[in-house]
Image (tube, rainbow, N blue to C red):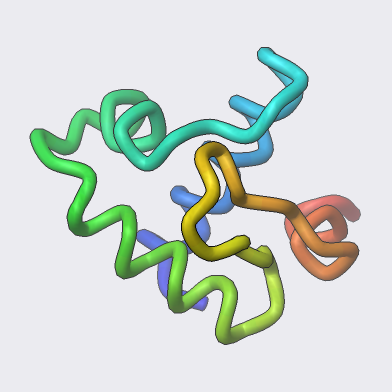
Length: 75
C-alpha cells in the first residue's frame, strides 16, 4: 500500500468512527485537502482491489471497510 492509499484508508476509518456511516468521496477529499474527489475515487477503487474496502455500485455512501481494512494500522 502506498502512503497516499494509507492516508485515504485511515481517513475513511476516522470518518466512519466520527459519523457512524460511510463518508462520500467528496468528504474524504475535503478531509485530505484535495480540491476534487476524482483522485479519491481511483484510490478507493485500488483499495477495493487490494481487499481493504468494498464499494457497492450505484449506491450513495457505499464504502464498507473489510476486516483487512479494519486491521490495517492496528497493532
